[in-house]
Image 1: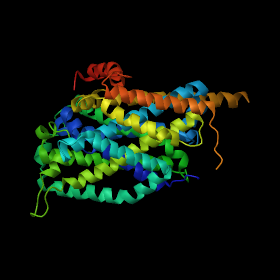
Image 2: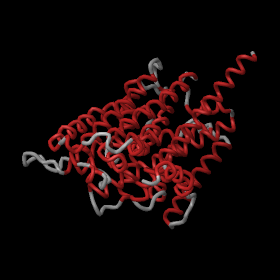
Image 3: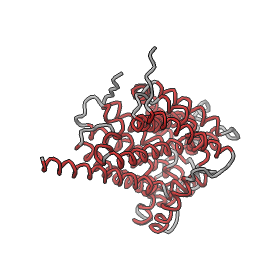
Image 4: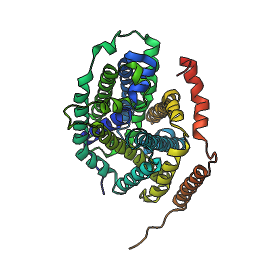
Length: 364
Length: 56
């Protein structure tokens, strides 16, 4: 079956990927360092993320958007290319496990307390595996259907949050200083802006590749702006003292909203949007792992890897971090530099490939 | 239906992935430090963060 996706479908998946991993946690991560300037940190992270992705796409475009894994082999040779592919597969696997853990943390902490995290982990992994069985195109078609619902629910949540909005909580602006603002931006740079580079694995399936760079970067910019607005509204609603002490401040803000007695506990709207967005993100990571393993083994299909990778993601999601505090601390201190290391390696491989191509064409 | 035979490399990788997954899962269930990724990454990247910002 020839898998083809449109630029519009890619755009929507990129937006989902960027927004819905960070929308619940980003306000707390930025505010801890930058206080009321957390929204400026988010904006700074967006700008830096866009610059990094522009370079990534610019180099990717030089090769005319082949499969990311094939590109590693082509640019770096057989052995180094294989090492890079294993690294990309591992990063995608690690990200999938972290996102699954994030989902179960949220469900246990905020939605259904005293429930077992395994319930949500196993359920989401089974659904993701089923989506992967149906193929790459299935995810994009499904996202076509779910994206308007997700955006509508998020917009409703924003509108409801405006009830408690107060500019006073955002003042004084730029009070934290540039180093605090940069510290706030540091954590959210890796999560989600640098992580988005794994979406490059799907470029090969895009039907018409003209303006693909613009589509991808627009998705990141749109997702990033939604995050900036979210952080802005959350700080203005709750203030820095409460936001910095919550793990999921966005959810907490909406939980406190009630108007007209029939509208209560409407925070579940955002939880539904978040779960759908996380499902898309986990699917993207899972499919990248599948495609990577299929490429490494030279198989015609990735189906033999579905179950073992599903089991591995479940085990990793629990075993990587024993506690939520350890998880949050790792994301804040190590995640960005960890992904930046992969980004640097990928850019280096692209450059090596371009230099080799140039030398080959000069010799011939 | 004719089954396409798998190449030895393919079989090796499938077996390797299964083995790794099962060993990691057993390591988690019996609380054994199999492939301690987080500790390794923290050892490398946390000092960079503390060097840049002094702490979270």
